[in-house]
Length: 214
Ligand SMILES: C[S@@+](CC[C@H](N)C(=O)[O-])C[C@H]1O[C@@H](n2cnc3c(N)ncnc32)[C@H](O)[C@@H]1O
Image (tube, rainbow, N blue to C red; front, side, top):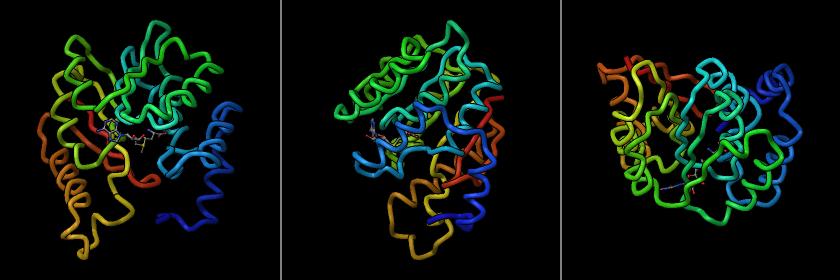
């Protein structure tokens, strides 16, 4: 489901700073050769992630859900020179493609891919303190990921989560029996009710939740 009429979305696209050549080819290659290319953040959302990262200037970023590595490259744009982005994905088949494009960028040495099931990998990150977290994996586990990483986010740090409008299903009463929609709705309510954060549900693309830890 597209939230903006196609011509308005195209207008926003045209009036947004272009992707780098590497990002453009990664985007095209993903659409041509990988299943579910809609999972990739894309041009406008990618620029938003890069902007947010450039504003936060994180030293440590955690991304849950690498896919072909597009959003990792966007988020890496804001890293401090000594910064590092840890990104987790259970699909090892996409690793070669992601690494191929990361290698073309100035950030390859700052991106640390951990292949595995996210809850298991997160458990190993006990010594890390994150400035920015981007949750973009299995929706049923968003709340679990939030709980697992919360104590590892510094005060003033940001936790973002993608697809929180879930193609509009979050306001569709016919989805009352759909467990994934219910999990996304419960996650949105949980963040909104959490007194430890301030939050904004940004209706960009499929919806991005942004929470700032007080
Ligand atoms: C929406 S895609 C990520 C898109 C990427 N962040 C981007 O914007 O280009 C979701 C990814 O999460 C991964 N994933 C789903 N469940 C996972 C889990 N339990 N542990 C690790 N990765 C998982 C999938 O393999 C998939 O590549």
